[in-house]
Length: 205
Image (cartoon, rainbow, N blue to C red; front, top):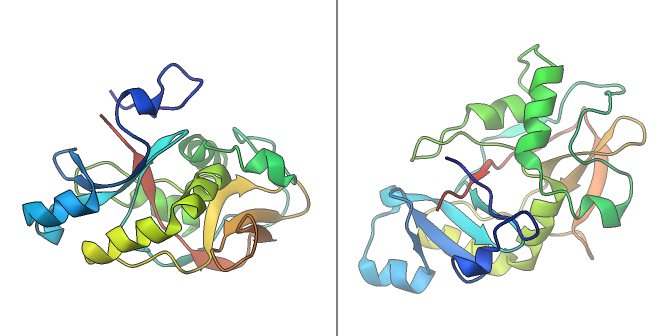
């Protein structure tokens, strides 16, 4: 059964494994970059980069392209978490739930960020989702280590502007992540604009 381990929701990740960044093997094992290197594993055996903190998730080693966030105009209040306030959206760890809600709401199957992430398959067979703004904020805390791991396994570093799954409740905007933005590395943009998409998936332990 898939589970997302979150502090305050029944399981503390630190009881399972220390907080930090790991390279995930396709068999599910988690390795520090030093241990991965010592084992001599090939890049083909990397499922993604795992982040263990308030929540746990796995980051794809590549972008899948640039896409619009979703349909233009107002969208009903369907999301697990949305807000125009930075303090609120930094706690949106519900990327999968946001994506599922959007795909149920808009069945047009247009080439939007959510559809593309949902179609992406990790090497272990799990499909992807667009991370919530809170998940991306956690990435900003480990950005250097994540990029070091990505380079080690032949991936693409996270240096471009990327959509989050978090909707801004004002106008037709949604939140995006950009490590080059000072402070919280999060800002809002028109949903009609195209930004990079980097799929996440649940960490199964």
